[in-house]
Image 1 (tube, rainbow, N blue to C red):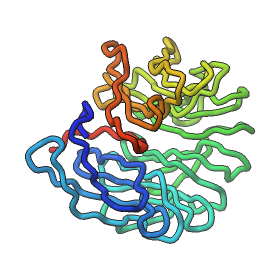
Image 2: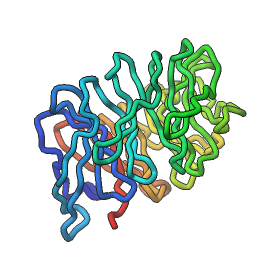
Image 3: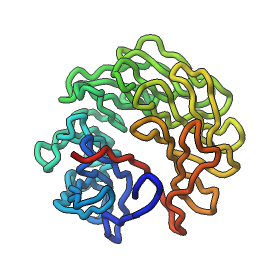
Length: 302
């Protein structure tokens, strides 16, 4: 659909469950997860764009992972030429890499622990992930070829969901080391781990604005899960969803001026947006009786 919710198009058109869509860096392809072949696998489809921002049809649909275990949480490399994902093919979670035509599939972690949720550095040279290989969930870093795997955190509690800052100089992650889940920041070598959300509620699922100045996250500090934004150092924390329903999965638009999230305030999951500093009331974009979830903003196709 376009940015105001018009022209909603079903691209996958299959009775299986299709989820976690993500646009390629150039906006011309989408990766997603589907169980259409009996288990969750990673698919890619190319969009043929014919004369308008939302007039698309799908061509060249490929099953990229094509293996017996469940494959989830795919992530494009910054070049758009490769994808990393987590897989249960070896009876435990491992991090795999494959190119966008399904060739060169490789197990990068090759470890008996649970290795999960890979995220590329902005320059594509490193991948951050979390693993319990040393007894509990910690944050690890490796090269994009799987070499030099090092542990960045060392704490008896959960350290999970790492992401790089847009400039590649920091890593944001979640930890419950202070008794509840909070948003933390550290250097890419693990130094200077700082609690930046610092609140009695559970603060989770952080995403950073493209300019690196703001963070959007979800928190239950007011009694239910809502969408908050804050400065990258944790200052000026603000509830922007402000509703008694469940609001989750906040995402910045590519220009950083808008936040989109999922809410069930109208009785089922819908996609809402709010232009920061402009909209007083969130807009329901999908407005449909079925559940709508998993947001991805599209870069303008070349």
